[in-house]
Length: 537
Image (cartoon, rainbow, N blue to C red; front, side, top):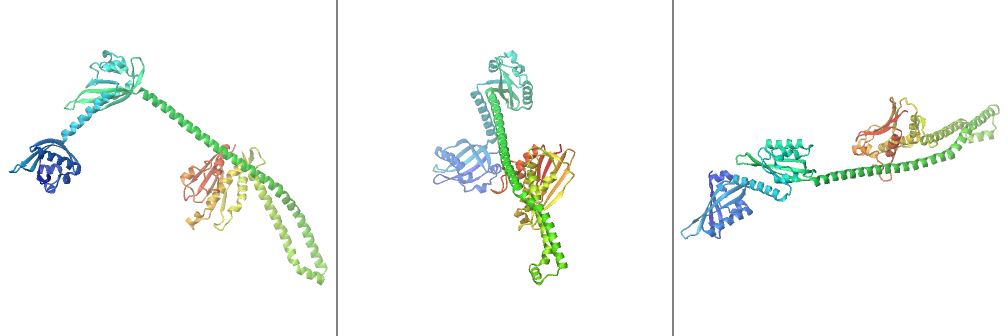
C-alpha cells in the first residue's frame, strides 16, 4: 500500500503552511493537492484536529529530529488512523524550514484493536462485577474441564455435569428451550442468551439469566465459550409481585370507575325521579285546576248552543210575522242583528273546538307522564309518541329563523307491550327534543341555504320478538367522538344552562331496564338516527 506524503513549510513564528501531498493521499482522502496549498492545519482539518497536528509539528521542531506517532484524524466525514513520521528539513544554518510527513494508513488495524479492547473490557467487567457462576466449554458446548463455580452452586460433580450432563440441573420444564437455544447459538456462532430455573445444591430452583459468548481464533473458528449465570430469582419474584400489584391496581381502578359510573347513574336517576315527580304534580294541578272547569264549560256549551238556536229561531218568527217598529228596526240595525244571527253559531262552534283542544292537551300530558300508573301496563307505543309530539307541537312550528319542522310518521303494526309508559315517553321526549335542538341550530341554514326542509322521521316496525322504533333527523349530525359519549352521564355539547347531559343517559338506562337496546348512528353533515329495540313480551 502506497504511503501518504505531505509537504509542510515552516514559516516565521513557527507557523505551518501546507504545500501539497502525493496522488495516493488525494485518492485516499478525496482532497486534491492544489486545494490544500497555503492552508494551515486548522484551516485544513478544523480547529480541534488542526491544534493536535500543530502540537506534533511543534514537537518535531523542538526535538530537531524525526518523530513517529499514531494519530486519529477524521477528514471530510471519514475516520482515518495513521502511523505518521515527521521528517524535518534544515537549511545551511541548521534552521528547519520544511517538514516532510509520511503516513502509513492503519485504520483497519486500529478498528480491529479497538473492537478487541472493547470485547476484553466487557469480559473483564463481567468477571469482576458478578458473584455468580462463571463457566466455560469447549467449541462444541460441552463441559470437558472442571467447573468449580458450577459445582459449588449446583452440587453436581464433574462427572455429573460432564459433556451435556449439566442439563440435568435445569428445571425439567426449562430443559427443552435451554437446549434449543444453546444448540442454535452453537450452530450459528452467535451470542447465547436464555433464562431458566437452575437447581441449587439444597434442591431449590433459582431463576437464572444465562449468557455466553464465543471466543474466536484468528481464522474465525471457535476455540471455546465463556458464559455466566446471573441469579435473578429475587428480581423475578419482585416482577411477579409487581404484576400482581399492577393487576390489583387495575382492578381497583376498574372498581372505582364502575362505582363512579353507578354513582353518576344513581344521581341521574334521582334527578329524573325528582323531575318526573314535579311533572306529576304539574299534571295533577292541570287536571284539577283546568280540566274540571274546562269540562264544565264544554258540557254547558251544548246547552248554550241549543238555547241560542232557540232564541235565533224565535227572532226569525217575530221578523216574519210581526214587522218591526221603527224603533226596533233602528236598534236591530245598530247591533247588526243579521250578522249576529250568522256569527253567533260559528262562535259557539269555535268555543267548542277550543275546549276540545284543551281537553286533548290535558289528556296528552296525562298520557305522557303516566304518573297515575305505578307498575308496568300494556300500552300502545304510538299513543305515547303522538302525545309527546303534541306537547312539542309549539317547537315544531315555523319561527323567524327557520321554517316549520316536518314530522313524517311511518308507523307499522305494533302490538301493545308491557312497559313503564311514562318512562318510555320520557325517552321519546329526550330524543325528539334533541332532534329539534339540532334542527334549530343557526349553522344548519347558514351552511347551505338550499338544504331540504327540516324533517324528523319516525318509523316503527315489528320483528319476531321485538318492536323497533327509529327516530331520525336531517340536521348536521355529530362527530364520532361525540357519538361515542352520548350516553355518558353529564356529557353534553350544549352551552351552560341549555342542557344537563342527563337526558340520553337516563334514556339508555330506561331502555336497558326494559330489556331493550338504544343506539345511535350519526356522521357529520349526515344527520342522526336513534334506534330503540324493545321486547314484545
